[in-house]
Length: 131
Image (tube, rainbow, N blue to C red; front, side, top):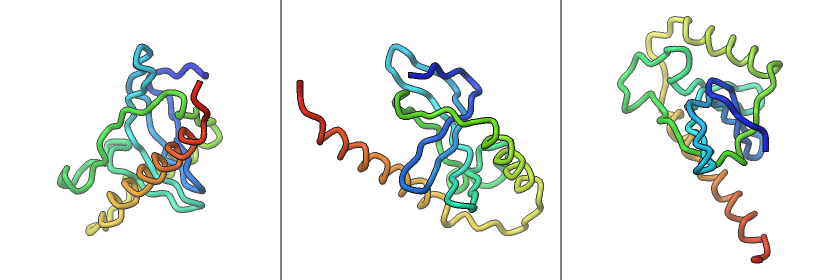
């Protein structure tokens, strides 16, 4: 298992979608990481999740995806070559003035992603033989 550190960018992957997040804290005794979602990336589409780069400007209930606790063994470190363009895109989207952003897809997209990821992990765990 790779050792993660605070501030590191990691990702979770399910099918062809990645959730990029910042590591807030590593809880080694619990084998869990506290992560803050930054963006959901599907193909070339990048959906900022409202917590990246100080972009929270709307009603918190509608625009912010909450932090998550996630098993360390499922968090994969992102490469610099992935993170730098991602952060540049998030920064550009945050600075672009868009008077009426559409946040209707944001919660559904992240919730569907997490649901799919847990379902996928449950299938893997159910296929493992008991010791």
